[in-house]
Length: 375
Length: 177
Image (tube, rainbow over all chains, first blue to last red; front, top):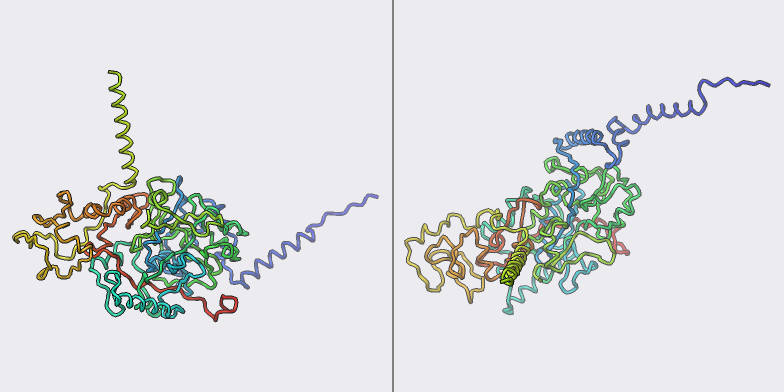
């Protein structure tokens, strides 16, 4: 019995496979409106796996998108961590006045969505009586729409009473109707003309606006701005199911926005509320687009990804201070290399008592709060 | 004869240590590095000698009525007055307690006479503001850039807008619907 089955020209499996591929190739672009660009984007590798040539191609594609959206290609650099550098941040709680200049400088520098507004820094107001108690924290102080308005007027009233009783009133605290008496020079410093990043223009139509009668620091309160703490042991990195977020050698926790699937596990894991999700297409007016960007930092984000503070990676990896440090009118924000004993941050750690938020969670933040007035 | 060189070595070591201590104290600071914008003087007021050079020096402590009336003096007024810091004979300079004259651009030396710990913190970058490069050239802000020397307490400001609160009514769980 010598039966010989002649080989089939095309196996059934092969035929079905190629037919499916062909159909998909023909139908999908039509259905999903895919261009080759979209397909490239979809098939793009993880940032750390991109070869220099591939990265260049990806960056070119993104610049083209920027050009279309904002009228400027901008630069998207991928400067790696500087060897021998571990970034650390210091914030002087005794000096911070809660003016929120940092919040808005950050928004401007880092191309955050203006509507809905995404802010990487959240300035929390605490009562001096209760200390750092997150249950008592108020991020909405000095807004006309604030639920705490009553409390604000209560405190202002309290102050006036104090003056009437002849208590030592703080010097030159202006009343609500009298403008602040500042020399033109002081004014210019507070408005910070030297900063490369002019102040975020406050839109009067933006609700809620600041209550002009409410001035900070409000008596009896102190302020703790909270952003990403750049943990050495970051819980957000541990939970990411696709490794879209990781800690770079200089200690900055970064996100590859093209690899992020938007599951928001990291947001749930972060004990500091530092991560923010783009629920809708972020709105960034073309005139507000900051064209100096970093791939892992402030390049415009798509809808459906998580973003966070990166210590202004696009600035700090080139040696500049972060935007929030540049803007702070009271010099409460400090930044430097933790591995350099002469750096500002190391000097602070050696001479001042520093504290980290939620120490008990063993996240090991590289963001240190301190009291500059205490030795 | 044999002891003397040892003593010298010992003294040399001691002085070395002393030098190291000061170096650590001023880590990252050298006065030549101070890249400040000019001292914040009111427009058109400097040099002071424009007016003061021909004027007799009145060392009497008094309320100024003709000039400099805008100055509110709230810097320990019970114990200080103009001539503690301004030099009577050459008004373009400031005068330290030692009698040494310093330029307005080096006014931090004057402030540091009383505010020692703050001066030390400023030199190492803990107090005050620096902009520029964290690993290179910095612009140091002088004490007087933030503190009016005549009324040094930092003034209150109107804050920038707060974040938008989450939309919706508060739910019984504490969040929003």
